[in-house]
Length: 296
Image: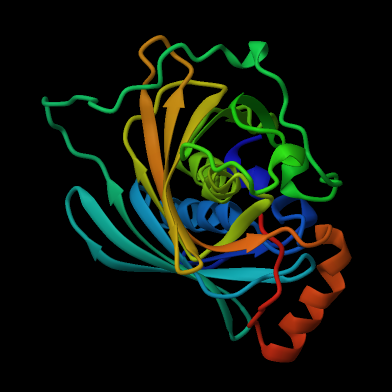
C-alpha cells in the first residue's frame, strides 16, 4: 500500500475536500488522532489537490479527534505560480477544528545542490539494532504499525529522573505496510518523535503533546528504513523544543527531511488506556478542549 492508503485518506467529488476516518491504527495510545497522521493526511490532500510535491508544511494542533469520527480536510490554494503552490488545509470534525496546515509545494530546476548536515557516524544497520521495547499495550494504536530499532536510547524502566541525557536520541524507523516507498506523507508520520526525545533528555518517564510540527523536505531517495536523529534543544516553562533529522539508509546518508516541534511536556502518571474514557468525555463536553492527555 502507499501512504495515503495507510492513513485511509479518501478523496471526495470535490477536489478541494478530502475525508480521513479516524481509526485506532492512526491514533495514539491515548485514543486520539496521532499528530503525524494528521500532518501526513493534510500533506497528502494538498499534494493531491495541487498535483505538486511538498516542499515544507507546518501544522498547528488545536484539538483532538477520536476513533469513529471523520476529519474533513478542506484545501485552499492561496497562490499557484509556475513552479510553486502555496496552500492551506483546515482539518475539522464538524465545526471543531483539529489542526491547520500551511504548505508550499512545487519543484524547481537548479544545478546547485549540497548537503551539509551529515548522518551520525558509526550507526549500525537496523537489522543489528534491538527493537524498541514498549511499556504498555500498543496493539490498538499506530505504534503497532511502526517498526522501530534503537540505536541510542535508554529503556523506559531506568528513566527515573535521576540522570538527564545529552539531548540526542537515535533510532531507525519504518512503516512496514507502506511498500511503495517513502514520501512526504510517510516522513510526516515518522517525524513526530520529539516527544520521545523529551523523556530521554530529561531522563524521566515523560513525553508530550505536540503544539506544532514543521516538515521540511530535502531530497527523496529509495529507502526502507529512516534514521531518526532526534535533538532536544531545551525544556523550559513546561514546554519542550526539538528537531529531528531524517536520513536514508543509503551509503551517502541522504538527508530526507527535518521535522521540528514544540510540545507540552507531560509525565506518565498512569497507563494511557486507563484514561481513554476521561479524554473522550472531555472532548464531548468541552467541544474539543482537552486538558488531561497522556504523552505520545
